[in-house]
Image 1 (tube, rainbow, N blue to C red):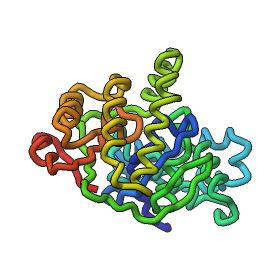
Image 2 (spheres, one colour):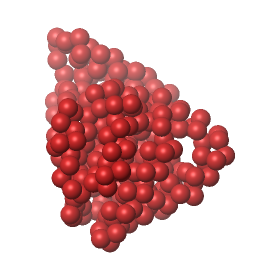
Image 3 (tube, rainbow, N blue to C red):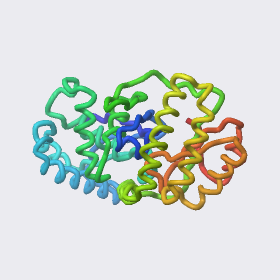
Length: 294
């Protein structure tokens, strides 16, 4: 069978904000990827993946809209023949493991020419499918994996953009060594949005800061350091539940030393976190962690 591989993603900016129409910026990350394949004899991990895909199939056949798009009969036939998702994308890491799976499913089992859809229409389809895993998916993660290009979401539209240059700084993902549940974190965020003070901060400041970081990174990089510092500080002060204890001190240290600035890489709670390093401090500050430069 076709074994097209789909990459993980790194959400540089837009976590939670994209659910409320902020801008978002994400890039494919080739270190981790996955593809659909089959086997007559499955290992325990492969059986778990097979059951996961079957659960997704059962969810999709309940959605009338997807019936015109996904060849569910072919999908079920291959599930019964040992279909599974071979992947090295860490689950619960914030790197888009479910997005890569959704991209694989759409690519292999679409009954229609996907080129006939606009980017917005594809995002809608992907959002509907990935919501099986997250409860309320933006569809942005699978879009990045599917197109395999840096993607910008702005004014409710998505478009591929040129390769992003990191000028005068380096970007790392830091492994917290804690598995996280995106669905659980989204529920936590929705509960926080009930509070009027947090809601005012989020809508008026956090989204503005997010959009500003994206604009500065792409268009005016000389202003980026101040904007990412502000976003990092605001995230630290207002998203306590999304930052595990073993990361909090490192996060604060970067702001205090004015050397690197951390942010969520997806929904947070665990998995990977981003660090924008302006003074080459990551190697010494995170020597006990696994980390990768983007």
